[in-house]
Length: 206
Image 1: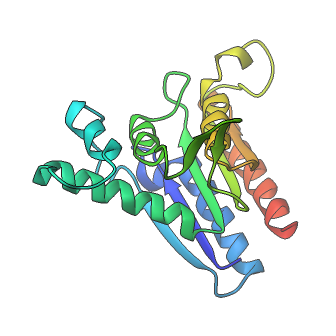
Image 2 (image 1 turned 180 degrees about the vertical axis):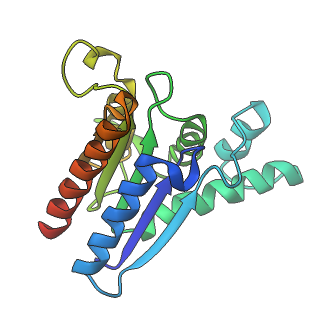
């Protein structure tokens, strides 16, 4: 294991529970694999543009011929994000639930990396993910409890991330949850502590 890609997506910065636990997981992995390289993409430092007609054309065109400067910049940024994924052996994605799903900036990043012919392709037998032989970790924070119980059906964060990452070929996915952080300081502290313990166990098991 040589390269780790850390994606953070919370508007709360370092106060984010998902970011704290994700960084802890990366530290644990580095402790197990000294010298491992880490690239961090903090998606809120420079929020990504959403897809529109021009940007869709920019990433669907087989070449860069005829692209405007703005389209070319978007295409190059998309290419760079995809290169991150291929270079990484381990991918850690931190996501705090917002309105039952992922943060806007994380969805924008996914829209830039989920590209036909790049991270997946269509074949006669169906779609094939191209991001193979990698490990992925999802660190998912939420104010309530969504892994079980009456609110489980409202958890579109975990189900969506598992679906789109698997579609791109990331089938070895582990999930760490930081749940119930809205139930008060003690509950939040317990949730973070439990998640960090799980991160330690996962890192040790690599």
